[in-house]
Image (cartoon, rainbow, N blue to C red; front, top):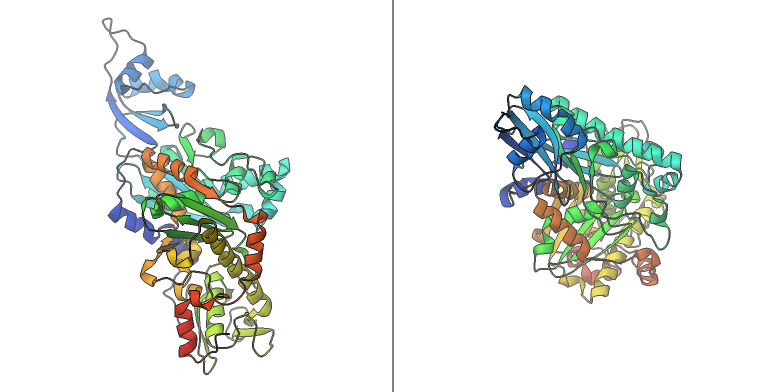
Length: 538
């Protein structure tokens, strides 16, 4: 067993929330702050008999043109705070898509304390970034499991629950409770009040956004798959029930449709593939599997339920990617000896998604399973860790059913990619760059993913791990109204293919369940591995 470095679940989740793409963005693409909020220090001339303008007009004149809206709560506080600050005040303005609105007035100068919130609202995990709106840097992150899992592990169960008023209210409350908990954690760690958060941006799949907004999700999964809204726009935090400054703008990254949401648009924005001439493939495999193919001239996308088999919980010995989960597996082809690594370095409790993919790839290369994903000797399972070594006292094994489920997931990804390529008349070789997005993409071993055919067989230097690109895209939008417009342009440019209604996709799916692919010529590096180990690639 290979020991870990004492990594805990919290540390892993925080690492997920600060992926390589954010560090790269700091080096390559520093965003000039022109964000969804701004703070302005004003020295307002006090009234006199010679200047008896009302307090509101006096304040608005000091803010210049265009004059912001002054909503009633701010107007009620205006006179008191102007005098409390001896006419030295800081005005916070929030951008609501087409206008500025006064969202807070404070006595004195507080322009150096300018904080915003970027959120990746995931089906399983929610990540919140505390962002310095002046420098653009991520000050801190907090991550936690989405409390909606108590109302349904998978998204379809939640959609069904949300189709009824009581269920939808429960899903909305769970989402808000998760977000409020993360804000509270950040506030305690960094010593600020939730009221200090001047703006927020949320990126999430279409169903998650429906739940948060209290929109009926029923038609998302019913033909012709029409959501209530794919581009919800801006709302005040108080309207949503989000416990930050109630007047602060909350912006939702625009989506495309029922199965390609704002999280994917945010990921494309973070990758920059929409500005490149080369053809790129963006893949985010999580609870669902989404992919976008294209370049600066065109973008096509599709989505399907690819993720459940990879989340660990579906497997017989599966579990989430937390302390005790096996995340890496190697199998000696001669002795069959298994080596593994767990998250946190302790005794293993189960197998997470990256461990499942590793195990399948190793079983294939060791000749224990064939290219159809079946055990060559007809056994029902392969024990990775005997009960005497595990933390539970039970064997940790990968079963034939696990392999079948994983093979179906892999096949769905293959079929979706082939469908996209065929739709635009391009071969697999046309893909010049590959972006692996999401937490799963961040931790999944590239070689194993290519070996089983989950990822295309490209030069490894052309394969980029984006990590939490949804959160990074939300950060970019938070800091830049120009990036918000860019996200709108991406959403408008994407042509979405509905796989649920495609016989072509289903035919490709049926023929795609071979490792790594029915056509081995598409995976030359895997063929070379077979030849090196003396395996017959048939």
